[in-house]
Length: 509
Ligand SMILES: C[S@@+](CC[C@H](N)C(=O)[O-])C[C@H]1O[C@@H](n2cnc3c(N)ncnc32)[C@H](O)[C@@H]1O
Image 1 (cartoon, rainbow, N blue to C red):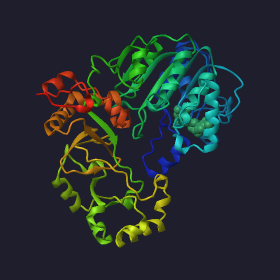
Image 2: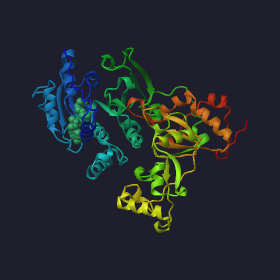
Image 3: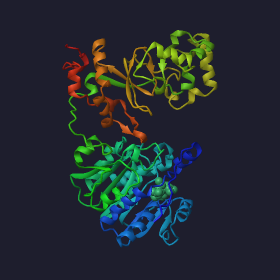
Image 4: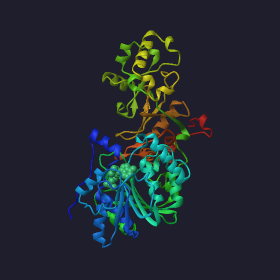
């Protein structure tokens, strides 16, 4: 059978932007077939897709029916009639789509239960949802889960909740979702509810090389959930090669036949919920010593308007800002090519015309600044800088956040791997970085801590505490970085010692 090429791989700006509004990223056949396979393996005879789009799951169902000689009736919803046109162009016929209703799946009043639900829900992040929609979702989660989910939950989360509500007893559900479903701030509440009421049977993750959505900045997971009694174990699999039949065969064999391209684990649900369903099982990692044992972590400075507050030496000179209002600062992670930032790094950035100075006014009344600063702040008002969202909450609007200079920085997101950076240049970092403040100012203690943080065994542990994005990038929040496990053998090799009262950390060697 010839393969129908139907992936939309948006890589360009406006096209990608339009897709972000509707969440139209199509599921590739090899993943759609595995997901539909889960329903077939469970004996489902009806398949419901709440977000039909270009019809990936309907096509997969038709293929699997003819392979297995089983029949599946197809039904679904879709909000965008044009997407269904694409489904017809992709090989489905009008009869296949006869039971697809053009409607909003989440907000429509439910009229029936379904025994098999499969979906790639629209991935629309919370900041693209209107206030009105958010209020409706809040009410929905109150009704279904008994508490409102954190406002940062996107549309896909409400698709999942609504679909679970509509899953018939003994029914099966397969959803492909971004990893934030398991890592977001709302994830603990969500999963507490799911695992108390449903049986999580399997989670499929993908290595960056095997991602179903190349070029899209997200780390997808497939969730397979049954409406049966919750169990303490489930299968967690990592798929290392795209476009093979192994995933489908593994699912159709009831998770028994894992080929070479799948790394499969049977995991305790309690362990996986603790460390994150999107992360591989944690084996042999000691959490006795963490970065928080030795240091505190704080995010870098949020200026609210880097174009106004983060200046090149040239700009600061032309404006005439006196040195007392300028602090050496670093903005972009790619401005630090290595693992340390020195006076030479700053000189190189200045030469390249990159901003290296944070304009940092204090809270005195505007009229009490030197004339050049007053003029520049007034220019800011004319430009509406004082009305920008973060800035308008400050009193007065120009008062810059303050930080001690951190001896160690952490570059927490980026195409180049997340890394620790030794700050020899005394710079303050902006929000592209986290500030690491060791509990002792003893330079020897700081050097040893930095050595531990550079160790490859420490760096691999970042995956245990970070949020994952496409292409293997990781984002780590300050509190999560404090939970970074430091391998005890590396800590003792480096002779880094903490005394019992962490706030009075001392080096005992
Ligand atoms: C990520 S696409 C998935 C389509 C297809 N099932 C696939 O996997 O290739 C999500 C689809 O959901 C549709 N959609 C967005 N919001 C919706 C809503 N509230 N109700 C129903 N469908 C919606 C979009 O138009 C889009 O076609």
